[in-house]
Image (cartoon, rainbow, N blue to C red; front, top):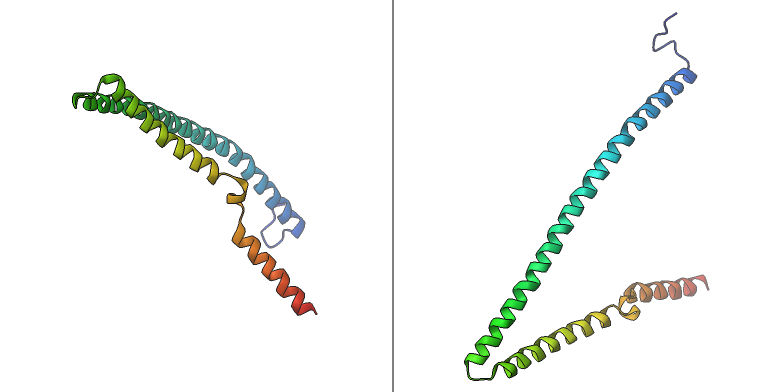
Length: 131
């Protein structure tokens, strides 16, 4: 005996709904796996491009610094002193960048001070109103 939609019990409707949802999820899981795998591959290719670009940027920086050494030595400064001057300047810049970066990463500078102050203010106001 075939049921029409109106003749079906609530139990049968929920059973069909449950079965349909279960089937839908079973079909969605492989799709999610495939999409995740595709995104991971895409991310890995992008990371490879970034690393390759960073390596080339470092090589370009070295060539430009050597050109600076040559330019300074062309001005009459001995090549050894020209290399020392460029090396000291680059080392000083690196030191200040590293120093600033480590200071910016200290826990005290990362704390959400405005939020903490706001919560303290809210707690103080709540205590005042409770009295």
